[in-house]
Length: 150
Image (cartoon, rainbow, N blue to C red; front, side, top):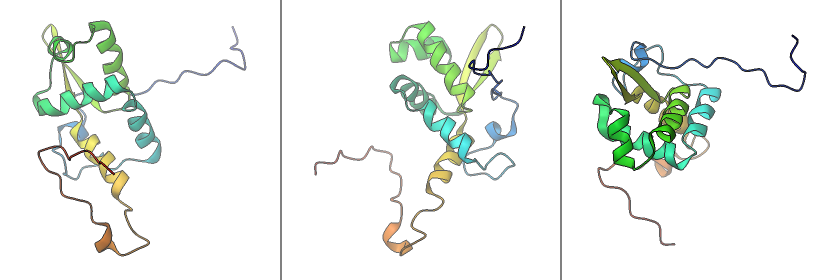
């Protein structure tokens, strides 16, 4: 049976696994997967453009390389398991989350090298047209920045 011309073609999107080198490398390390292209950056940013996915990703980043199980995440974020599963799948397809099976349980970990590569992609060309001293990125602090009032 032929597909209709107006029907979109579904393509398989690779899901990152715990065995891929980019996810076992610490942030800032150099490996073959450290770079990110425009399409991957768009996919990652699109996945984070939903409030619940952003909350899930931030919770996983907060947990660090140890990651969290869906049950813990669900309780922590007060979200239904089916909703959480949907959002974890979206983050995994974007390469931002790694799923690992531990016996009967699943554990989700943030793909820290991918996150680092995305941040690098967004800031690599900062202020190339002007004086680089005026355009330095502020250092990251442990506390969140105060909200803008002006």
